Image 1 (cartoon, rainbow, N blue to C red):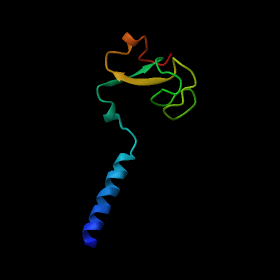
Image 2: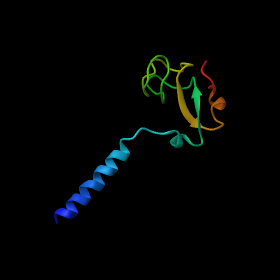
Image 3: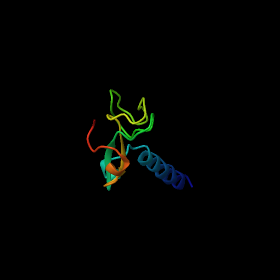
Image 4: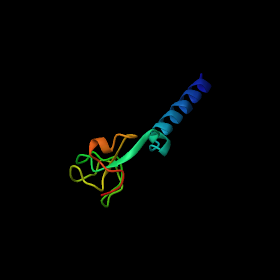
Amino acid sequence: MEKKQLILASAMAAVLAVAAQPASASDAAGKEKCYGIAKAAGNDCAGNGHACAGQAAKDMDGKEWKYVAKGTCVEMKGSLKAM
């Protein structure tokens, strides 16, 4: 019985370790960074002197970005480059 518990605990630890990993570039496949569309605290990553998602100070800041489906940024009145 102890061997089964050890295997189960190891499997759970592996699942939790994978879930705790940050998103990678492959997670963004089919997406592009779109600047100037993020709401305050709604950005996907770094910009304007901070390093984390969710730290945009104001709506539609041209230095903040969100991932959107490729080809949709301009339709959303965003930019593919920081403004």
